[in-house]
Amino acid sequence: MFEAEARWLCRKVRDFPIARVSPLLNIGSSTRAFREVEQPWTHRELFAPLEAAGIHLVHLDFREGDGIDLRADILADADLPRLKAVGAKAILCCNILEHVREPERLASRCLEIAGPGGLVFVTVPYSYPHHRDPIDTMYRPSPAALAQLFAPARMLEGEILDVGESYRDQVKKRPWILLRHVFRAPVPFLGLKKWRRSMGKLYWLKHNYRVTAAIFRVPEE
Image (cartoon, rainbow, N blue to C red; front, top):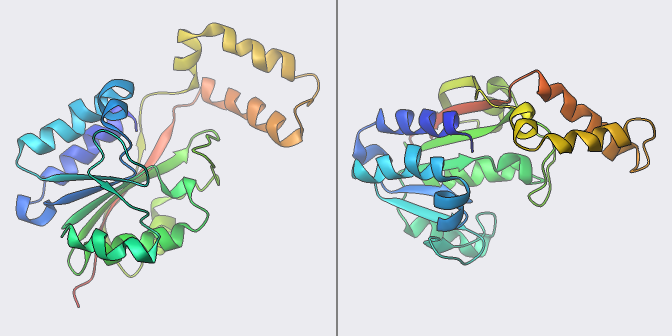
């Protein structure tokens, strides 16, 4: 998650009354160390302000770890009763859709857990290089495509965020990584697919990363 993305989410969640968004289920939360040390801006710009506002956060991941409140597989039917027992009024589904092979199943499950009238806050890369976690399907939807994925939920807002960061920021910190592209450029010795990905990253030396961000409301029964 990018800093600009975290600020957008915080602002949008806080636009709603606390009763509409609490408890807030954070899917794919990772550990406290990830949120507060590896990506400290997510805690500073998103989670800490939401907690300070009185919103009850429930961090969900498929693994155990410090700072993970609920260990479950959101796509596993056996875990669904425990997920529903949280009573989440809203869900954060951030940077996950590109890492699952069936994004439509994940979208449907989010709507099912949030329940009638519930809210789902979604972010997913729109212009960003391949990144495994452990896979990246290269799902890069526009707001319109995301609206189709989350149908029949109504999209309250949808936009493409310029996060103000790019591959050039990584190069500024570690300029030697450009040597990878120099050595790989003449011959695709890694295989054509990996070679294309490596060369493709050079696009983001000039262009900023962009993220599709949207808010969905589950229909009332």
